[in-house]
Length: 335
Image: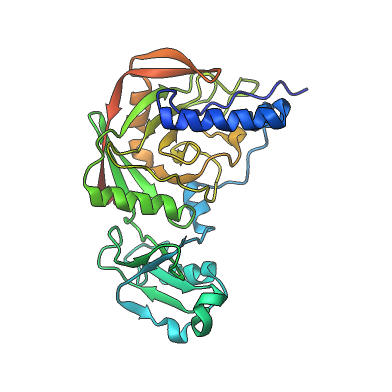
């Protein structure tokens, strides 16, 4: 018989007044509808271990995703003109661009960005146009138009060694492979961060190891609880003085060891130190830490911390937050 649903292990910092007020209002509305419904929303469906999914990784998950950002028109030299290259959907346009990357052998992609017109009312005789482009710098793509009145949808495709950012800490640099196919809006935010050349206030403030709940490979121990500890690092990617625009939910592959995902709609985020099948698709995964850098994340989880309680969840808060800079990077072992 399954036990009671586990508490939601990922919660925003109680010190964030803006989000605390929003969460309080949200809870009041839920209570007015149904206290039981509120409890169900803030809990996971079952504490019983679920069968592991078929062998996969965040990289494979991204290969199965092909999404772009609506209301965005990327510029740049065309490798295939949309006027004579029409497709039925943005996903098909994205797949057409991906097909011009020499995976799995690696090498530069002939196409690293795509632009599609899929709004029948606004596109008119340009409906279905799929422009495949090559950016001068895929991590600083040329944008000609952005906004609700823009009829185009655009996306990026990263080749081997591309789309990697570094979270530079005093313990070392965590290299993150971003996943534009699954989380194009999240990747768009990282492109914005790189353009700012500053991430003042970005930091890790919560760190919890695997304890006796997960093994060194990140697999859940049979009959063990699901925490605490919850095998994660948690932090914020909000830049001091720069308002953060909430990121809508995107494709949500399962959280694996090394996955980096938003907590809610951001700017709080997590890096998972274990395979969390019990979370199912609760969090938007937008990248993964390169395997050789996970030792840095594990070291961070051992830093001095104090126990606290957030929204009835027992957490471990770092006594000294670990600040980091976001920098562009490349890495030969990325795939």
